[in-house]
Amino acid sequence: MSISVVKYTGEDTGRKVTLSSEVFGVKPNDHAIYLDVKQFLANQRQGTHKAKQRAEIAGSTRKIKKQKGTGTARAGSIKSPVFRGGGRVFGPQPRNYSFKLNKKLKEVARKSALTYKALDKSIAIVEDFNFEAPKTKDYLKMLSALALADKKTLLVLPEANKSVALSGRNIQNTKVVMANMLTTYDVLNADNLILSEGSIEKIDNLLKK
Image (cartoon, rainbow, N blue to C red; front, side, top):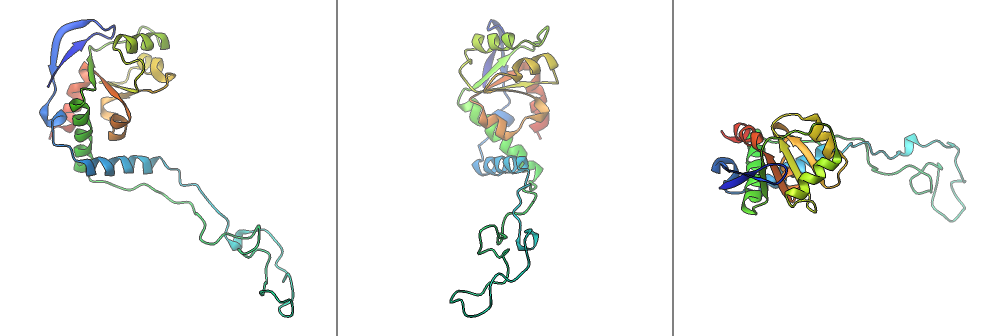
């Protein structure tokens, strides 16, 4: 697939880049995508939820009523789960939700996600650029020039660029990542990908095996 390269101002450079069929033209594997996204979201969970069990409740240990003769069930502690304010039975406890996935499966998932974007023609390629200073206004101008101002976008850079990253940080529905930090979730979560020209080679080197 060949895509025209444009400047961040929207001007056509007259050049085209051919996307690798090994990365942007594979047979999509939906289950691999599902597992990779599931792992990504699971890894974001803090797992700090906690409910107090019966032994952790602060309260008197006195028997609250006599054993027999009340006509009701026996009760020996105000901390019993059957009473308001008592301990919780099988309540949530702190845990780690993360799990591991095979490295090759994750690569298949990323290739599949990129292929879907290519098939949807939701990829724009811009010539490598830089802003003189971090300015949200400049980033918004770039989105408008690319006709993506009303879309959820993901800008992929070949390497860290503080000016560009800070310029896009405060814009809703926009994210800036480096090529080596690209995830399946980020690709699918965006309506359109904006690939900096230099990032394509980085993505190919990471995923071409």
